[in-house]
Amino acid sequence: MSRVAGALPIRWSAGWNRLLSAVALLALWQAVALALDDPALLPSPLATFQAGYAELMRGELLFHVAVTLARVAVAFALAMLIGSAIGILLGRSQPLDQIFNGWLVIGLNLPALVTMVLCYMWFGLTEVAAILAVTINKVPTVAAIVREGTKALDRSLFEMTQVFDVKPGRVLAQVILPQLAPSLMAAARAGLALTWKIVLVVELLGRPNGVGFQIRTFFNFFDIASILAYSLAFIAAVIAIETFLLQPIDRRLGRWRRA
Image 1 (cartoon, rainbow, N blue to C red):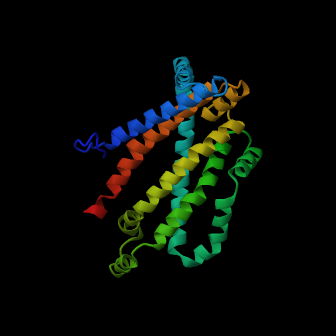
Image 2: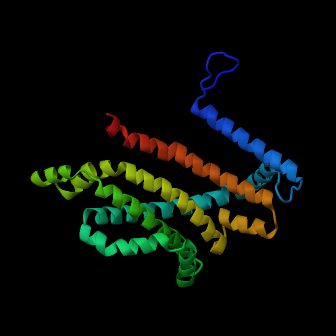
Image 3: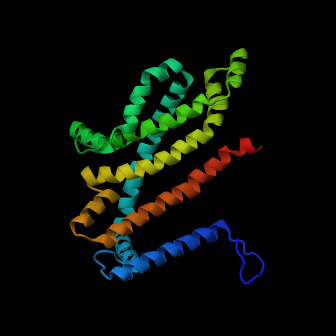
């Protein structure tokens, strides 16, 4: 909210604020490109969009973005399922947490590049190796976040389920998961951001398609405009996932806290 020449305050909606931010970023990009005066070093926004449009018309842009998104979706789903299960087990059992806490610390600090190289060496330059490398890198992050959320669960509710002899499946669905919703969403957001970054590196190292592969190809020709075009296209796809998928799910899961 701001004032113009003593007039009534102007209220900006979130959408207008985001649009203003995007325009400011494009203006800054254009100013830096003009100051450098070297399209080979930093192309202008228009040149970048023209490169992206050319790739779109050739059918390459949508294909490679779709391939990368498919890898992200598979690795993300596997890591969320496995990491959430591990996190709930460790959070609910102190002995298991004490035994495997060191393993979790190692997983959190293991360089992603090491995992990628080892998976490619063990399983070859295959799709399975690529997905496995990404999943292994993401599971510890999810497990750590969900474990801390599990430790903070309301113990009185578990005591009530024991008194009434509630089945484990109903305890998980009606007691554990609703309380874990904030932790699961935090793990999902952190995991998604980590997953797509790792997927691009995996593709750059050993896949014949995807955004990472295209970036490597354009790197060989020093085609910065195309590199930026593919990067912006994939960033736009990830922002769309956050806006139209994760945020609505987060609002839906949080209704019970506001009721």
